[in-house]
Image (cartoon, rainbow over all chains, first blue to last red; front, side, top):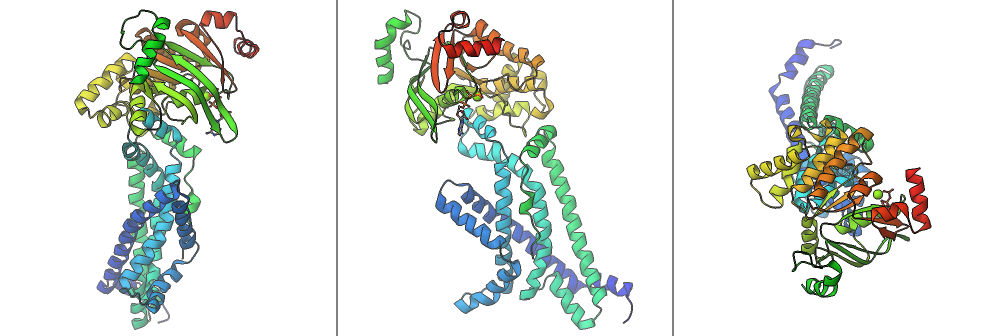
Length: 243
Length: 268
Ligand SMILES: Nc1ncnc2c1ncn2[C@@H]1O[C@H](COP(=O)(O)OP(=O)(O)OP(=O)(O)O)[C@@H](O)[C@H]1O
Ligand SMILES: [Mg+2]
């Protein structure tokens, strides 16, 4: 066992048990993105509202979830809440933790996207008698969304990797199943080489999707949107690595 | 309602025996003792202004004198704090239905165009007719092409704003506003963001509109345009309407010291 066995690594890569872990990782990510976007949109709207209670609550939420490690959040939900009589299944715990955490990041991305759409756009919509809903759906949202794609993509990339933290509360995703294989066979490098390959594939696929999206939504009036983006940069800083 | 009859009774003499007897006296815009504050700052200070239907007003004055604020209060993009504003007899009193009615009667053109960058020229023009007036797409397109032809850019219909010159963008913005068939057009320095060679094409478009009898309120420093088109110049300073006169009189005999200084400065 004093050498690295490429064959073993390849075998782990095609290991059915590990592949199922990959599916769990993908599932966690997708569910957390969808849940996080819905919740994050709500939190962003609260944050932008004129009510001090709503915007204060939203600020507190963002401050809390961005200011504490995801690992602690997961452990508290999984092992801490039962102490108060609240008990979820493992997978629910992981999803709740990931969604709550992701929502805090996405809320800031959504908000900065909307802030970057110039006030003149809304004023033009009002001057044309557009209803608030039409203004939102046809004027502000599409422009904000285009500005959100790059930071959104980065956040999803880091979420994909952050799902590995769910292994700590025994969710059998890619990381956890790699650990299990490793403990069974002690081929540390070989097992983690396979896991690493999977993570790289997943993040690369997502990168490609993100580039596609950017191209698709950036196709119209590229010159103008670049100018808008340059004037009011979406807060890239809101996308930090977590964990 | 009472607004209309009251005006007719009070002002029929002033307006003369023009056509439209039942509407005579209802001003396109009437502002009475309007105030607008930003914190401690008074942006509009007891502004009174009456604009008759079909009248062309040019508003000028030094930077920060409240020209934009005034024009933006008329379609409630800014909310005035005190005083009365009537647009075609509808009072802007914060009732949603009244605000909507006023916005339907007015079109606005901005210094920075404010076209929707993610939509083509045509999409910019048909959005409001379709979503606000419930017009069918084919009909809305026809309407849009009519006005795009009028501002002489029908060939740019499928382009995005980012692909157009400033002058073209501003003409699209005018066409977009006209598609809602406004009775009053508000212009806030429509040529100030344009390169000199494009100013003319936009002014020509505005002149054409004026000739067709549109009621226009126009903030501009284009004094040539003011001389040629305006029925009246409204000069503002420090949130007040300081002086109002026909162009001839305003340019040759400005009454206030402030207006004289202003004219010296812009005419050199
Ligand atoms: N949203 C705002 N908050 C605070 N102050 C404002 C706001 N909008 C305008 N002001 C102030 O009100 C005053 C009048 O502004 P306004 O834009 O109406 O001037 P203007 O005559 O259009 O000037 P310009 O020729 O520079 O466009 C200015 O001093 C400006 O600083
Ligand atoms: Mg102004």
